[in-house]
Length: 280
Ligand code: PDD
Image 1 (spheres, rainbow, N blue to C red):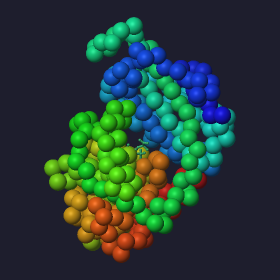
Image 2: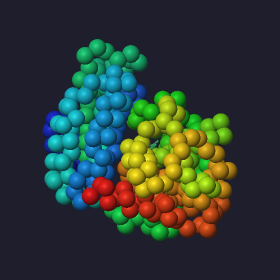
Image 3: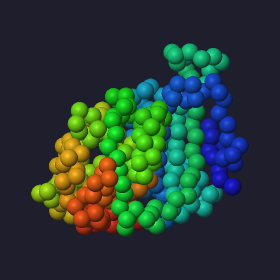
Image 4: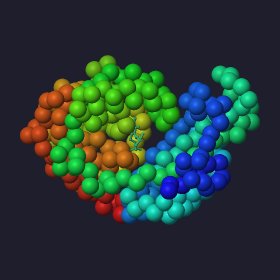
């Protein structure tokens, strides 16, 4: 039986309930975080908590528990649910009132929820097989740097990917890839440079992206933060995604076309190993 932490209380996840007038339900007025757990420990916790503070601050939702308090709850959930490999999901909404109204009231009490998900990242078959992605139009709003729970654009992209037999969608705006539906997108270009889009409101500032870029620099891989096209990705030596739920995974097909020899590339493998080693 899994445990939830909801507004200060631990309870069985299946029994955790939020009122229908909660603004998270009515307006998607909230933000979230997903943090990996490896060997029973949080991965990149400080970065995820900093991004939570930034997302919540951007929409004016106060954090009811400070970062240290949240990390303590997350560790308690890991212990209660005996998670060695998995994720912590955290959702913060503006809270509920007594009626539906676009304008939030002053002094609302936010809703804060956390629960775990067991998941064996290390045994992911995509590590050896590579992933297929589709290109898909960027249909989301323009503040993608805020980790909003309004995820319809992502859900539609994931459905389209699944219908095409792919695992992820790369979202394309004005001819350039912004990011994946739930990951950041990277390629190793023909010159051997690791390329990923620079940070802006157009994409989520991925915690794994930042860590992987730092590791690449340490390992001597040249890094360029710039936008790239699907055509460039198809001509690349390697392609990959990064996220808390996948770490680093090779992309070997885009829209059914094979990248390079169709096998995960050496830089992708190395960055994945380095990321996992640094997390341990
Ligand atoms: N998604 N871009 C988008 C749109 C994302 O949703 C995510 C993460 C990322 C990668 O960010 P990070 O490395 O900090 O996880 C990029 C999480 C895993 C999710 O929604 O489940």
